[in-house]
Image (cartoon, rainbow, N blue to C red):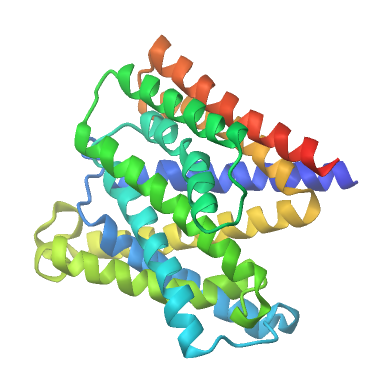
Length: 312
């Protein structure tokens, strides 16, 4: 039964992750739906997640944190984490307008390298030669992936890699928040209730500056009719539901198994997403692309092996 439940949670995680990635590429991709407001849409996703997280805290009292963070702690720790999260998600969605889903997936596989880098900076991980070597291996994999990309777009590549770097910063800051009860973020639902307002407001601010959604959205072909507006509104809510489901499935998987299982399943998910991108969008991959992905995954696998070895 334990294996069956673990397998079910992995399937849920793969499903939500795959559906959300395909959804984002379909909605924002220049060759797909071409809706040019990724930051505005993502701010709506955050609103949906905040509403759902708040409902969960009301319905399930055991999820409520015992401590509420002080305003000083909230501004100095939670706000930077929220802004890093906004840049991670926002730049990820912007990059999907110009690069393929498969290449985006490959670029995001560099995330662990940035996680380790920021872990060194914040003192969460001691600097060791083997960890520096792992960062170098993952970096080499990213260089190979970029070199082998058929339709290389520099701006999209920079956006995806910067998003990956912000993801590394986000995870290090999140680790700091989760490790200290005074922040009141001892589970993903509580964390979402505290961080999604910051992420959503940051995203909306960036959107107002860069996208001008309220003056431009009516001119877009997707929202030039009542039916179009209703459809896009439904799609925005759907994206928020998928994102919420993804976070919860990750939480259930870690609670049921371990972070190591999540890491190994995550490696397989990267490969699966490249296959999904090929099937759904016809993304082309080259031999050099695949070699780069395998090199990056080797670095991730080496890190997982090291963590298992250290825990024995």
